[in-house]
Image (cartoon, rainbow, N blue to C red; front, side):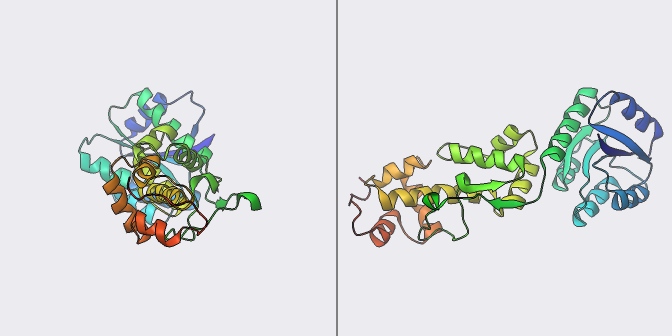
Length: 275
């Protein structure tokens, strides 16, 4: 079991929370704190896996504590328990890496869902990204206009199981309408955390990486097939040819037609441009 602490200025809330989450196998409550300063000092020294935290605390409030923990790159995850339903509170908490924001009076189901999410993150989270071992026959082609350090999702491997699941899905579905919300739902984490985790592991935002993936595959089709350009656009997930052409030029510096005519191998078959 992972270690967890509870931070709230009301003792009855702490006792109620402990009673609500008893008989679960994810976290062991190892500390109770009634102000932000003592809790933050403990988190800095002991780095518990999870902290349940109220917003309103004496000294350092909950949102300030979350922000300080983020600034110091502390590994502790947070579940906010609050009587404040204002969207601004929840938004700020989630921006500062809270796993979830639970309103008082909290239910066991809500807390269990949040704890399972935190447990999932802890079980799957590692921090090293590595390139897959690609054999010479599978060595990925470097294409003009595509960043040299870009690797398509089928050749990018990470030890983080959550991000690997996202990459696998992108590899199989980049031609479809996919979003960070969809990837977050598939991996059972919040969209904010999915976006942050993806950027940390891959080194690029989800939307930018998806576009790079599509443009990469479009470039291969332009160079190595007779496929008409509007069909290339459709093949990589763009239903609007003109939008595809605009995005392609922004990323490569060339229109699809000029890219094909400039970089196509002399022995490659020729084709018409748009139709």
